[in-house]
Amino acid sequence: MSEQEAANALAETKIGDAPNDGDNAKDEDVVDPWTVHSASDTGVDYDKLIVRFGSSKIDDALIQRMEAVIKRPVHHLIRRGLFFSQRDMHTVLDHYEKGIPFYLYTGRGPSSEAMHLGHLVPFIVTKWLQDVFDVPLVVQLTDDEKFLWKDLTVDETHRLAYENAKDIIACGFDEDKTFIFSDYDYIGSSPSFYKTMCRIQKLVTFNQVKGIFGFDESTCIGKISFPAIQAAPSFSCAFPQIFNNKPTIPCLIPCAIDQDPYFRMTRDVAPRLGLPKPALLHSKFFPALQGPRSKMSASEPNSSIFLTDTPKQIKTKVNKYAFSGGRDTVEEHRKLGGNCDVDVSYQYLRFFLEDDEKLEKIRQDYTSGELLTGHLKAELIGILQKLIAEHQERRAKVTDEVVQRFMKVRKLKYNY
Image (cartoon, rainbow, N blue to C red):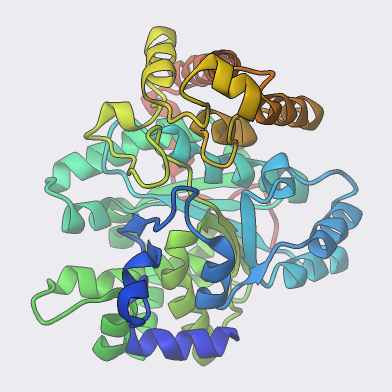
């Protein structure tokens, strides 16, 4: 299915709705910006999702071209297929080869004070992209969105945006290349951002957002208008201070695949605005500790590993709650081996163990039954304890003053 065919289908069907296929409909995955439900114990069928959304797979040919262009290996999250889908990445590489500037845009919806490991994944790859391509980055904190969708006050979502900004900064972004903004703060102070929003809003009808996002007559008007707010940072005209009022600097958006509906809408609008379509890199979902049929939630602390967890909490959570692909007894496990496709500890290692050879050895040993579940979990615990301790150490150095510097409306180091 082409991108246009997917867009036409979306006009008729809410994102994530299963096709009406009798008894099989209930077995379809549901993926939209607010709901992710896997019909399988092994998680979302991403090949089907690519077809449904009309994107393109990150295949070996694209990875080889990326490596040829950047003259280094791609990030292991891309190499292992954890970033698996894309739109117009070849165009981004064309721009880079020709010296045409572009920028990165990603975001975070601040609904909780403690971010979890799943929230970290897009920022890890975004940081790598910023380093490799040496380009500006804008990070949108959608505090307005979380006020509209969650049982949170305006003041609380605004506060959480600044707390989450500290975790984002702790990922190592370059202050001279990065602008982080709260929607509450920036929209009110930037006529250019507001004008970009209005131009988008004028070109998208209620029937279109109803078809794409499932809104209905009882949906508050704040939610109906929000997609234009998330779309606006895709266009450089929203940031005149960064791009010297040049409106056609192209954009690359690394994000989880559930955010793609916003940007399918954006890509549909872009040609009518006379602006370049944003390119995208999509990540797979990070599984809850209890497995892909469960949901990670800030209100359920045992559903994931949070960036505020202590070494003891990490050990307890992995040992007690991480869904195992091992067998019921040691004897049975030695004979039949473990199932890496459903084992959450192994899946987490795919995200955070960078050594390919070591990961493959673990997979072989666990599948053969030589490696027991306890040893697999111990390997993960050690990696996560180190990862989160280092993150906490960096975050402790992010003062309110540092946050203000990243969020100050200013020109970055680039001369456009």
